[in-house]
Length: 259
Image (cartoon, rainbow, N blue to C red; front, side, top):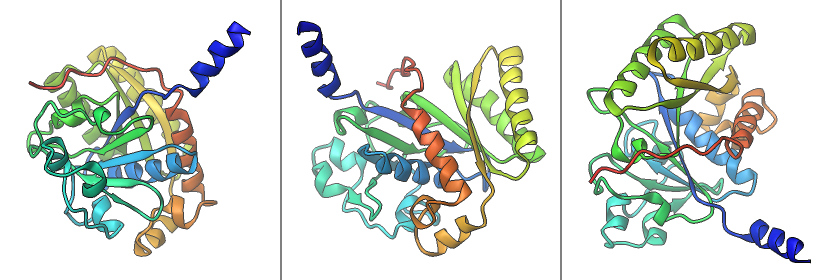
């Protein structure tokens, strides 16, 4: 009986908030697309999701695509000028969105104190030198998104080297987006993982792939993600598969927040 009661308590206990930073490696890689679709897929799995939009209010940001106009941003919430409930906006898909312009909030702001028992996705923006914000650096997982083309892979590897040396990162995950040839994409995954281990002493972990799907453009015109508009499409299925894996990723020690 005691063992059953202990197991039940652990089952019902709140799970720690997981923070996942998603960043596109180069123009058109699809970082925001991936962040939004992963958020939708996680909500569809019953998770609470807060998306911190570092790109807002730029064209193509989550706020712009979902036509959201939040009353405040992360700095307003962290500074107690607004509550989270009054600052963020819930999209029709169930993802809560809060702008988080880099540099606006104090570097030590920890989103885990704002969002309990769920997932925080940071749609990360790089600065002019290719570095991450303190918010993205402190995520439990950093997921880089790239396309399966030579130029994109080259850009991604250069960006990975820069992140490794700038922030001392030891582990990164990456997602291949817009895949036509699955075999070629799997080879890219193997090559990147091997290059990271061999030349950078860096763990580069494949997070999976998302197949090319023309319906993504159709969904964008509808101001929706493909996971919302066409849930049976190949890309939506792939995003759900990646989202399902997120809960099984081993926890790593988060980078300390800047003082």
